[in-house]
Amino acid sequence: MTIKRNIDIARLTTFGIHAKAAAVVTYSSLEELEQIIADKSLPTPIVHIGEGSNLLFTDDFPGTLLINEGDSVEFIGLDDNEILVTADAGIPMDLLCGFAAEFDFWGIENLSGIPGSVGAAVVQNVGAYGVEFKDVFVEADAIEVATGKHRKFTLDEMNYGYRYSLLKSQEWKGRYFIYRVKFRLSEVPNPKLDYGNLRSSVGESPTLAEIRKAIIAMRDSKLPNPSEYGSAGSFFKNPVVSHSEFERIVAENPELEIPSYPAPDGIKIPAAFLIDKCGLKGHQLGNASVWHKQPLVIVNHTGNATGSEILALERLIVATVEKRFGITLHPEVEHI
Image (cartoon, rainbow, N blue to C red; front, side):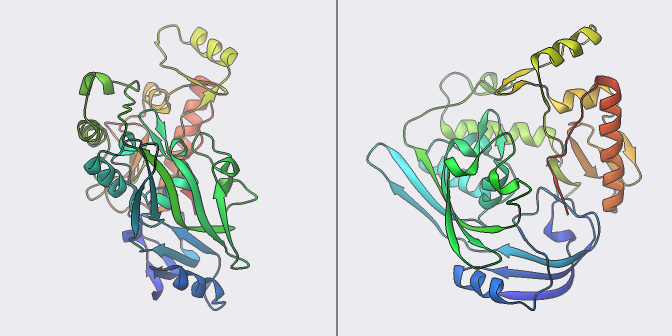
């Protein structure tokens, strides 16, 4: 376990924005996490972060950032050709996707290339190419910050939705730290190829490794390399509108072929399409810009963007899309 004070956190997030945290604590075991929670001398609030790939620090942080460096992962074969995976919450999600592909364990290959930790995947319900983490989630072991008590969160308790879980709600946010995650994979091939142009990229009977390779290639072709341009990946959620609202948008924009996907609460419209049709692809505001290949992404264009510059560009995008289409975009990236 290490404790560092007054630390520049640019290297701890993929946005690479310079800000300072009063303390940064790394740990690699449950015992160390229990010690940290019991230590009342650490600056508050205490926020648990993973790979820092979905965070925007809008200013200096007066509290403590926790980072799980545990690297334990276990695969157990079950009787029904399923594999139970138990992993420390700090393990990078893509590392697990790579392990699964190597062993031909199906279920998370469509999540390949997503930056962030498996613990963050649980809270955020990360998703890509027609698959969400809730599709494989079993349970998570967590510890309550205020009391140090342990509890499990099951699939039914997590109340999963689009980029949402119980632990993102106003009431539960920050109350528990997840330290271990369990999820199920399968030895039976079950490719999910119906999203975007994935099927045409891999054919009708691809191997798991071929799907993973194709998805990573598609992500790399659209998204900036964080080592060159800092970003938090997809910045906005794809909006879901009612059927009547969708009909209004179509009627008001007859010149556009508006892409849409069925959603439990209505119709999902790609936010990238809306931003693009507002003419904002590549738009630069100070040191921040909309990525020229994928308008869903805001980048630290010069490497010197501040949190306030990212916020200003975010607000411009939201206001422009709302004026043009009557749809309010909401950020997927967590603001701290």
